[in-house]
Amino acid sequence: MTEHSPRHDSDASPDGASINLSCHFLIAMPTLQDDHFNGTVVYLAEHSPRGALGVIINRPLNLTMAEVFERIGLSLQGADLGRQAVLQGGPVQSDRGFVLHMPKGEWTSTLSPPAGDIHLTSSKDVLEACAQGRGPDKMLLALGCSSWSGGQLESELARNAWLTVPARADIVFDVPVHERYQRAVGTLGFAIDSFLSPEAGHA
Image (cartoon, rainbow, N blue to C red):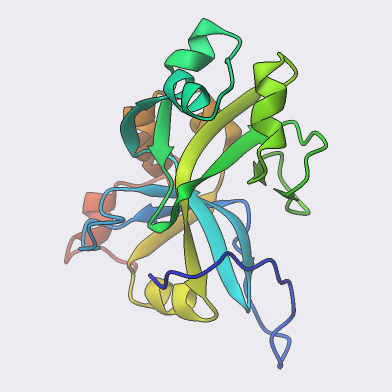
């Protein structure tokens, strides 16, 4: 992973050929030996020839939403939301909050992919709205994000470090955090162990 500020470009590649995995899950293969990403599912909010940006959705910190709100001087409305674990979203900007949410709402800094219902906001106003009972219907809070420079994610995909599948909002918001990896894998239609088997007929 290259640690840099998140990019928000959507320029096409010079030859016009590119893939766009925005609104997809990146599912770490068991062979991915990286302490930051081993066993993770990343929701990819943005992907273009200039780079990619996402948030890990299945790595909880020993920290609750209520504790984070208290630290930033806000009182969170709703006990259930307050008990929700804050996630480690990735190694980039680990002291900054990133909120995955739906519906979109009107916030200062939001990434909204052309397709898909999950939005990513990094401005504090969404948290202030939550403190006033006006927050999104569904949300999760992560500290830090995951980002790739141009071509880097494509290189990792070519090395079979990740599997990809269209993201599902129910896995992001409704499935318990420790079950999200297996639920995301289940949407592939085959077992990762079989995928790694020498007898497997595909790669």
